[in-house]
Image (cartoon, rainbow, N blue to C red; front, side, top):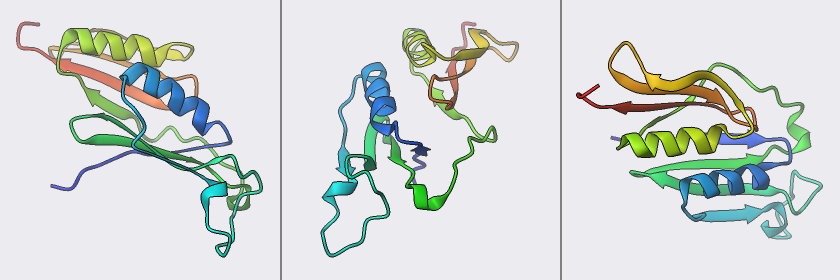
Amino acid sequence: MAAVNPYLNFSGNTEEAFNFYRSVFGTEFQHIMRFKDIPEEVPSPENNPDKIMHIALPIGNGTTILGSDRPDIFGTMHQGDNFHISISAETEEEATKLFNGLSQGGSVTMPLEKAFWGSLFGMFIDKYGVQWMINYENSSF
């Protein structure tokens, strides 16, 4: 089956956001390219050459979060509320670590706790406006 990798666009703070995500997941960038890395013969859509054109951070089990700074020529960006990045943790400890780390400075919409369907589950919006769900399924709950 094809892999699904969320691609996040930011308004100039992609590097800050991805450094935060890297600190929580404990992984290293797979790729990082700035607009200044575009060959001279290719016109750049961005006026600030240090902004991120493309970044990739593996977060586990073949999943990578990708991102970029949205160039101004594409117009104003509106953050949507029609998606969440959902992570299925392998252990309760991992679920707790990811929930606490990623939600730091953000807004918890559902605390991480045992849900009526038998999973450890929580939801939040991180400090960059990205919505997350953390889930850990364990038959002993």
